[in-house]
Every structure is written in C-alpha cells, then in structure tokens.
Amino acid sequence: MTKTLILGIDSLDPYVLSDHKAVLPNFARLMHESPTLLSRSVFPVDTIPAWASINTGLRPGNHGLLYVYDIFDPNLSDLQKLNFDYLKGKTYWDYLSAEGFRCVIVFPSLMYPPWDVNGVMVGISPIERRIDWISTELELDACPKTAMAKHAIPHTLRGLWGSFPGIKHLGDWATLGKEVVDAEKQIAMSLCRNEDWDLFFAYFNILDVIQHRLWRFFDERDPTYPGSTAFEGTILDYYKTVDGFVGEFVDAFPDASMIVLSDHGHHSRPARTVNVNEFLRARGHVTTKGDRSKALSLVRKSVLELSTRLNVEHVLIRVLANSERLAKAGKSVYSSVGSIDRTKSRAFLSNFAGIKSYPFGGVEINRELVSDREYDLLRNALIAELSELGTRDGFSVMKWVKTREDVDNGEFSDRMYPDILFELADGYGVGWEVHSDLYGKATDHSVASGGHNKDAVLLLRNIEKEVKDKAPSIINVTPSILDLYGIDCNEKRLDGKSIF
Ligand SMILES: [Zn+2]
Image (cartoon, rainbow, N blue to C red; front, side, top):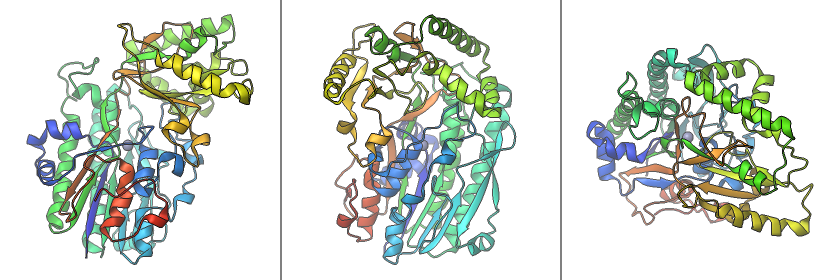
C-alpha cells in the first residue's frame, strides 16, 4: 500500500533552493530525483487562500477563505472572526479518512481546532498571544485528546512574533526562531515515528516569517540591501535547518513516497509603487474630502518617509499592537481611505489584498452610484484605462487587468474580490497615495522587505506514477494525492486535476 509523507513548508522558494543547492544537500538530492520543482500559487498569492487551496483542491473563489496578514492588524483581530468550520470534511485527509486510510496530520495551517480523522490530527492555533516583542504563545490541541499525553505534546508552545521586532531585537528574534521550529519538528517527528499512518503531513511556517523581515539583508539585488551585516546569512541558515529536518524524515522513512511543497515562494517586495487611487482621481472616478485630504496626504507622506529614514516603523507597529482603535485609524490614514469620500467615488482601490505594496490588487465599483445599466460599461472602460497605465519609460505597468469573473468565477467570488483585479509589472507594488505623484516608493519596505512570489515548490520522491503536468497549480495537490490512493475525484467537484 502507498505510504506517503508530506512536508508543507510555507514560503519555501524554488530559486533559493536552486541557487544554494551546494549547501542544501537534502534538497539537492530531492531536486535531482524529483520530476517537478515548480508549481504555481493562487490569486492573491497569500498564505491563507493558498493553503486552503492546497488542502481542498478548490480555487479561492470556491473555498472563500481570504485573510491577509498586514501591519495594521498585529493582534490578528480580523483573523479571529474567520470561520474555518465549513472546510471540515473537505480536505484530502478527510477524503482519505473516509476511505479507511490512516492519516496523521500535524499543524495544518489554520485548521484549528483539530477534528476527528481516521488517525490523529494535531492543531496549532493561528491566534497567537503576544508575550513580548519577539515571542508569542500558541495553543495546541489534538484529536483524539489522548494523543497529547501519548506524544508528550505541551498545551502551549512558544512562537515567533510575526511582526517586525525592531532592529535592536532582531538578533534575539532570529535566534528564537530556531528553538521554535525545532520544538515543532520534534512533535512532528514523534508522531511520524510512533503512529501508524498511510498518510503523514506536517506543516512549518518559520521560513515565511523569517524571509518577510530579513529579505533585504539576504538579497544583494534588493534596493535596500545594506551590504554585509550580521543578518546576511540568517535566511540561508534557516534553509539549512529545514534541509536538515527534511533529511531526517527521508532517513526515517526511506521507502515512503514523499512530497515536499510550499504555498508560494519568496522574493523582494516591490520598492516602487503606482498610486492607483491617484490615477483614478485624476480621471474623475475618485472624489476626495476636499482640501483637508491634501493636507492629510502631505502629513501622511512625511510621517511615513521620516519613519523610514529613522528606521522606527517598529515603533508604529508597537503602538498599533497596543490599541485596536489606533490600528483601525492607522489603517485608514495609511491607505488614504480616510481622505477618500467613498460615498461620492464611483470606483476606488480595494484593500482586499491588504494595505501593502504588493504587485496585485483590485478596484471596487461603488454600486450605490453606478446603476446596473452603467456597470458593465464603466467596468470595461476602467479596465481599458488601467491597461494603458504606463511606467515613466513607457512600458505598461499592468501585467493584466481583468474582471473578477475572468480571474476566478467561484461560489464566493462576489464576496471575496472587488469588481476588477490586476497584477502589476515586476518591481511595482500598489501605492495608496492621493494628491501625489502617480509613482512613489514603498514605505513598508524596511519592516517587510520580503514578499510572496507566485512560483512555489513541489518536490516528489519515490512516486511510482508518471507525472503528466510538470508545472502544475497548487490546486492540483489534493486531486493528485487522492489519485495516489485510487480515490475517484469526479464526484467531489474539485477545481484541480491530478498531475499523474
Ligand atoms: Zn505562505
């Protein structure tokens, strides 16, 4: 019978693996043996929609799970409102459980509290309690409960705070991450060695947290690369740690089939921005709140520029972490939402993908002001206008601009996405200024220099089936796993297809 061991490593980047395989011997061996390396993430390229797609085989529009981590929600208060319950029964391990296969599932992203499976499911809470400026405390739980004592699993685990800890604490923070991931790996390894399983899965998120904060110290091509510092080797050090424990799992079960995968890769977050609301304002679609908004936008711009120059964004983050009210106010000032009169604007930049300078975004059409008859006309006109938005050198700044239905026409698409979606050219991110230049600089780069890349990793080992789709989407993972166990996907109405 097929015995499959799956390791999910958030933000494991295919290009970092290829560039550094000389010091990553276990990944080098896997890459040599695997018929695949690359896979493609979902839109928007973010951890929560991506893992929900990997685990269910559904496009984001059909699983409906979208939450984007951003600096204006350091306490994850919006995350706490998300309900994951309806995904119960829709993951590949639920389908395998129902067919009598034994599944051991450790720390699946967001799937908390754990639920009944044919085997053991150990969950880690996505809601963290902050202890200090570098660490958090996370709750653990298992189904069945007896697994906690059997594997000496503690009820809480120390975690690494996801926000920028401040340059003074960066060293301690980077050291703590090693302890955190080691504790998680030991729990996963204990379950892997001591439980019976047909399918084992463990998930680790440490590379994502580390790369977001330290990317600019690692990547010489980053425009804010400071030269050689104490942190230049930290990201690669974490890749070596992960390489080490991937090797331990291979050595412990050399005959098992193995899948090592990520939800997306990592690269430098765009340092240049395009102020889409300013573009819309200049064309009469966005209305601002009069002269006050011009003054406000100047204040915002100088505060952000000053904090970038003085390297004190972490102070801003700390203030926000201590006050939900301030965090909300900060979000609206930062994103210009405060200076835009939404009741009078026909279309404006959407914050569905977070208030950050990411290369993808969307435009919301105000249905209070736009009639059904006008809607299609306006939407098509906006798509045409945005498509022509060029860079200073005359190149198009848009990779693509589409209606939401053209991107992902799913059950939840209306609720999740704004009317128009787009992706910007490489190196450009969404900017939020109005009454400003059309182009600007990303003000969040020094606290979050790393961003998600849509190229993800899919490595296979000891799998007897022939791979037909060698650069698949991550939504093909669930149907491929079901295929390995001979389970028919047809009636499950998945969006993905088996790669075999
Ligand atoms: Zn991720």
